[in-house]
Image (cartoon, rainbow, N blue to C red; front, side, top):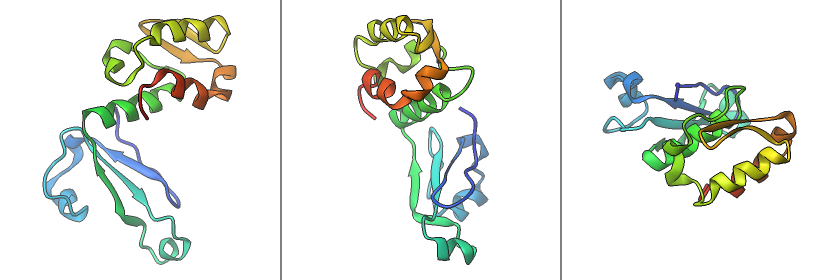
Length: 138
């Protein structure tokens, strides 16, 4: 998954481990480099944000493997490329995810197969329902 920067109140960002220099780890008050990356949030407080205090001190999370897979799955599903290599995500998907994906394909909500898929426009409209149906935990 690529790093991304969220701008604005309460937005989230993610940095890959290879981008986390010792200086950034110190800035983010992290004692060690996370194996899968660091997710952090901007403050939800408008006044603090306007004062230039952008980061939420409680909004830092070192991602483990499962959280990383969930994050990557969510972000991939929101793109035009969709999710590739579904076997990679088996740890976070329900056991009958292939059957469910086939049912959604037949309904015109996604295009693809057991290897990977992309949501159609109609599928994007019901994104949350599809995700909660095929993911074991979110």
